[in-house]
Length: 379
Figure: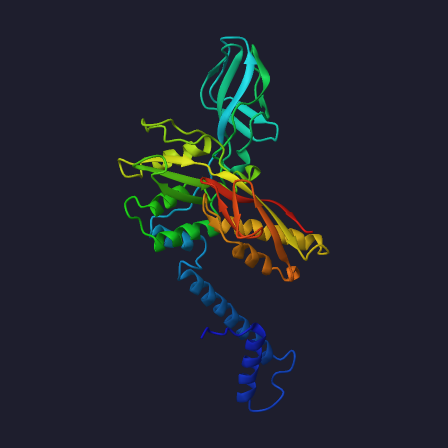
């Protein structure tokens, strides 16, 4: 049975009771008596000690450890906190042929994020294509194609304004405790086995920005491994789907290299794989799920928002590319909302899959497609 820690009020009463029991006369614990004050001080000290013992108990197990103690438990299994990483991409500027943007030139995007050029960019056919990396690491450096950018200095024969030519990807914030704990516990539960599918999933999850991963064998032919992955935070503007083209690592000569987020993951997997494996980093395709929930037409906006958030969380936790997602897990998530009592899911439609049995059944996604929530209606 768990230890029941006494509250500060309970400790004060206990100390006061002990003092009174040993006093030779009454009246020793009046409001401003020395003994009363000393008793309160002693109770406060005991409360602090209990708090410290609680904190020690939390750090003594990897399930509840925090901060550097969590990192220490993770390090025992070779897991380290994923650092922040800068985003990278390219931008184009018009100019006179032969003019050059020097390496290290500051470039500012319209949203204020600063980048520097990685190498000299010379104008050819009227356009200079500069490869950029964010000055500060973090997910805020990620962005889409076509964003306006400005050179930090004037360069003769080159326009000071341009636009991003590719999506900016790879930016990620420092890994949060919950993510680090999840990867650590996964490693405790599934130690490396020299190339099992679970190993590929764990290696992918070690890449900054990757939040979910699934490995499949022989999808691209004998001896191949396909690793699907999602980046729910860094690519939140794209519903978590990686931005780039699917493919293999840049050092792999047996097929076409990936680009963008897929290349980042493929390059990370390449030196870890068994030597003969041909590994593909692949972004799932969306299977958009529309759901109708009756019985809540008169519910508040907050309740409807909570229902939508619960469905999103349920799909994120349970959905897999090309697999089956049971309606029961969605119903369980909605049922956890007290104000949603009496709801009934009346229909589910899938853009790239099937629903069975009936109109509100389990969701089966087409190969490579991952269920994500489209719209929720409340008829």
